[in-house]
Length: 116
Image 1 (cartoon, helix red, strand yellow):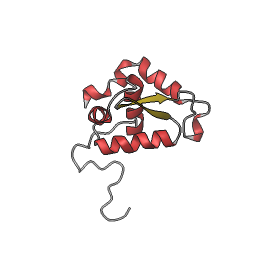
Image 2 (cartoon, rainbow, N blue to C red):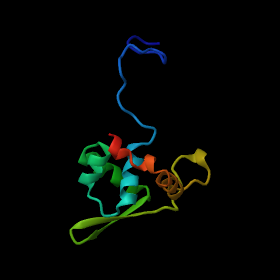
Image 3 (cartoon, rainbow, N blue to C red):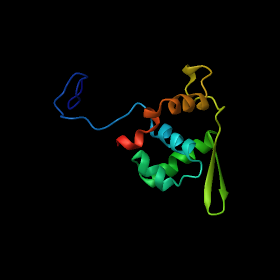
């Protein structure tokens, strides 16, 4: 162990910061799945990130083929590509749609914004 690093069991830092198993990318995708016309300002508020971070995450998701973004009037409308395989290679045939279906079927998991 290097100087200044805490080992796994050390508890001298007080309460830990809030963290979740789901990434901000997953939270953003859940918000967009619930409302494909949602403003990124609202996504950022719900997820607890900056608007710029939400924009960056959406750009990642569009770039990787998980979302398509189109303009309708003055608003963006998002289309989630539910048949797109998950990025990690160790989860077999799991698709983004499969994950979103699971998370949405367990209401308490998708309602993350109310507990932040």
